[in-house]
Image (cartoon, rainbow, N blue to C red; front, side, top):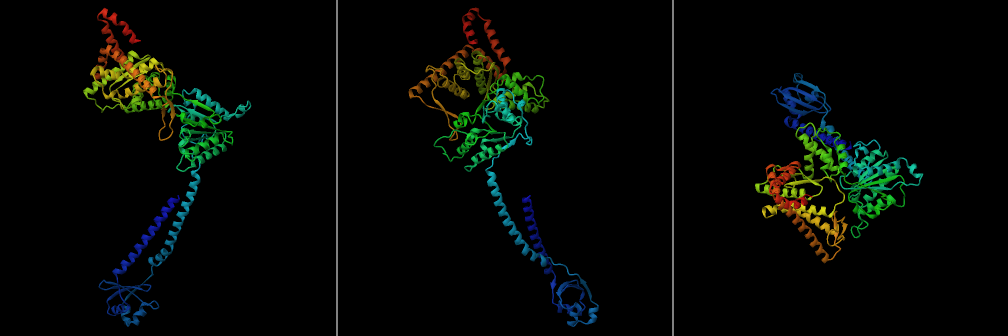
Length: 634
């Protein structure tokens, strides 16, 4: 409102100033056009009968001659026009014939506007200038004090509009919901726990990979707890000036204490709760001061009785040990990626408000999405809805979900990226090699789809999904994975005698997996030893994990030798399978070149058809090679 008033005042001043200029210029232009003559000339003209009429306005005489010309003159202020003409010797007969009109004297704009502007305009400029200075000083003071206040958002009062998420909208996380419901009961009915000597937990840390539902669970707590819920991101504490973060922490806890019992939720707490590294920043570093203030507020000299701190992170290894000790974060709730039942339940929640066709099978979609988080599944359902709308469908069909899985995993189809005939052949044999080795070597996995249609950065892809999900893997399964990764590399080498750049990503993954067998899992000839020490690097812009070398050059050479041995043995196994199944490889690659995509059913028919054709040959040859075939099938 003040800004509008200031703009209006400025426009008014400009308008008055322009009006004064126009008024002065108008008066000046009029005076320039009409000739001003002395009174004696007027008397002479009247005596000679040259004047038609005279209009008297105050002391101003507006004279009109008979020939049409006009002039102005001024009479004596103390006498009338007639008396002045008589004084100048004009005969009375001439004066009787003269037409004289007396007009009311108008108010001259310049007579009052110029003195007014000379007084008012400087006064207005003075008032505006000092008013702007005082306003800026006042707003700066207010901003300085509000700058140190916590910008936390308040939920749970019923006054904040937004997404009303409850525990019914959170699927699969049953153990986590059970733990949190217990804490909510503590806030609602504290006497129930006080009677047996239980104390309220100080903090609850939600740990889990990105997208597993930490923030969603916090939203449900905000709506289920029926107590004030203050939400704030860890990055909102940090500002340019040192000390602002600590001041905001104090402000946040003071506000929460006034509304106790209450809950504070700090999302992405690892942004301010990282390990305090000696020699990096020191005690005056802003993030460290903010962390120290959080530590003091949670379990310092002054005790909080009715405030619980919820926090979420996907990198618990970076958090400071002082933040994780009992008395601060007493409970750690680990949220894992959902299993097949959890994925199905999550998709049911996301599909509640969407029209689904009768052929939609959420169980099959859950089987095809191992490793998907809740956020991935929400994105999958949304992509399926977008795809159905793009094709002007009234409902979402199963094919929309299946295509959306590939889009989420690999990216959209690049139909404009056309492969040459040679590239298409190389890509077909590469993916056929992956699929064939997977079918004859992998245990418990099925090839769902093989395609040479470009998606994202991949020129082709093979989707092989496990029948059942496992938490533990054996050495044989790791070796099978390495062989599958080398399937495309070996197929290119077997068919064309050389390899392409398409196998670079496969080789990178296979090498990393082989090295992990040696350094992490103790599955090599070097014995049950873990080589290298993992440590976080929360500085220098790097947030990942590195392995500190804690072994000699001799051991390093042995690790390289073992890694190479795993790769070479996997290459031999893969090449042996592809050599024996060369006809199957050729058949799959040829079909891929023709159709570009092979689904699970067609892929299994191709393998069975080649086996059947081979089985109708020489009986003696079949008996000789039967055991090897059965071995690969197992």
